[in-house]
Length: 403
Image 1 (tube, rainbow, N blue to C red):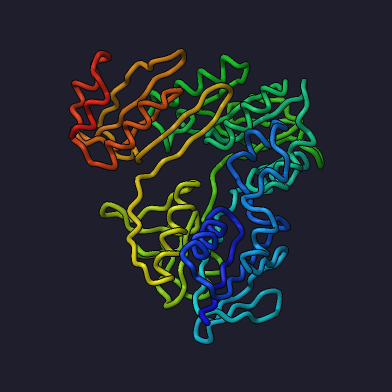
Image 2 (cartoon, rainbow, N blue to C red):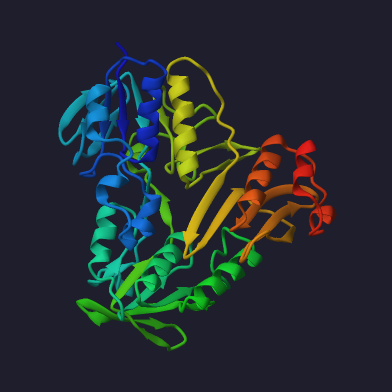
């Protein structure tokens, strides 16, 4: 009977094993995770969970009873230390476990500030796991000072929640604007202004020199000489794909664990999905850090594992909740030569449409779900879009769906 072993306990792992059972795979499945929890949702961590609106139990993607009834062996608090692909077995805390197919859903790890910049001081936090948030939440209280290093989505979401909890929040971003790598200037400006309206200080084009403090952080010193008081620091300076296990086993690494369009790695009978995996897409190799990718790529791997071949060719989408604002993104705006701005249909709503010449690449929709849904269907259908018509606020968006 075919044995499938899954390394990693996040969204991709949970989606993979659920789809395998949905596809009537009856063989043994073993899930191995270093965390103490069953697979859980990560997006609410820096939002509703930090705010206190979500319990730890509600984070779980499926209850323990589901794994029991579906005959899934779950090994929590367990570390896979080696892969022997010749003998098709993994070493887990010194014990061998055999497999016929191995799936790596090892996810990613948060980049940390180095020690010489003060990254090891007490009160300095990264945001990746539920334990990370629990440790951070202890110090979140009205009137205290929070410094967020890095103006990416995770850091901005933590900034928003902390400001809502009454903290004095400062965001420092070394690039010329927040969201510099992932959003158009128009979207970045809108989000920066949203934070400023909610009392957050947003400093752009400023660089951290070091964190101040003895044992515990007390402030952030910038290279321009400014010092900002800090009771807590959140470092939101990006994540790295977790490739150490795959690399030590000799798998090909290329901005993550390199897989083909079906999810196969360079080594037979080993697959990968989620944040840790890079894959071919529209003539290039990309890696997506999103719930959508974790679910859909893992489900594609499940289909291929049971002999129902599919090719993974996604339309990427993402979202971020900050204050009363929902930012929905579809497509990848990298390489855009023009951004068309459309007023929204409601208060504080707007959409930004990214074009490379006359080709639509992506849409950022801010409190504008209709623009997001239409943009998603346009990208999926590869319909033609005229940028000049789109710039006219009286243009009917739904007409784009006629092709």
